[in-house]
Length: 274
Image 1 (spheres, rainbow, N blue to C red):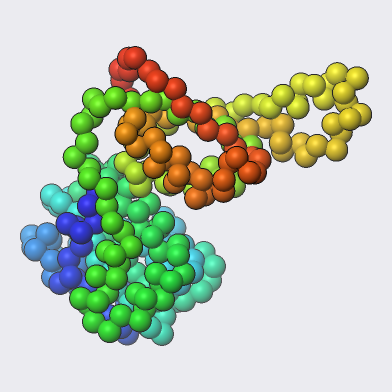
Image 2 (cartoon, one colour; image 1 turned 180 degrees about the vertical axis):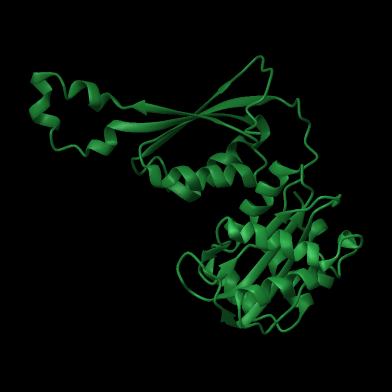
C-alpha cells in the first residue's frame, strides 16, 4: 500500500487541544470529514465508527502513540492522516501514558488485508524514537506529512502475482520474534503464512539416559519452536532475509532462529489469512 497516495494533508493537524478521549475522537472525525474521500459521509458517522472500534480495545498502543482506525461503509479508498497534541490526552493507552501522536486510518469495509498492511507499516515506522520526535516537532501540516513519508518509502506494489516464488522456511526458538516478523510480513505485502508448533532435537534426546545428564542444563524453551512456511517472490529474497535479521539479529552470529529457502516448480492456491 502506497502511503503517499492515501495520506491527505487536508485532514492533518498540528497541535490540537483536547481534554478527553471522547473530545479527541470527535475532533478526529471532523478532521476526517475535510477529505474528499469522505465527502458523502458526515462526521457523526465517522465518530461513531471510531468510538465503536475504541470500545473493542484502545488503539493507544503505547509510547504516546495511537492509531485510531475504522472500516466505513461507502468508502471507496483509504484515508490516512496525522494529528499531534503536544500536551497529550488521556486515551486509555496500554502503557497508561497520554497520547500525543495520532495516525488515523479509515477505509472500505471489505479491504481487510490492505487495512492490516497500513497498520503494520505505520507501527514499524514510528517504532523508531527519532521519527516520533521529528513528527511532534513539526511546525505545520506540510512538515508533518513530509517527515512521516520520508520514513515510510513504499515498495512498488504492482507486482506480477505469478512471478517466480520461493518457499521460505523459518524456524524460531524465541517466541519474542514471532509477532514482529508477522508484522513485517504484512508490511511487505506477504498475505499469509502457515505456522506450526515444532520441537527441537533436544526434546527427544533428553529422554535418552545416556544424554539426559549432559543436557539437563538446557533451557526448556529451546526444545520448542515455531516453524513458519511462507511464499516469497524470488527477487525479494535477499531483502526479506535482511528485514528478518533486523528483528532477530545476524543469524550467523546468534542462536534462536534459522532461515532456509528453496525453489518451487509449482504452486496453486493461497496462504492468505482472510
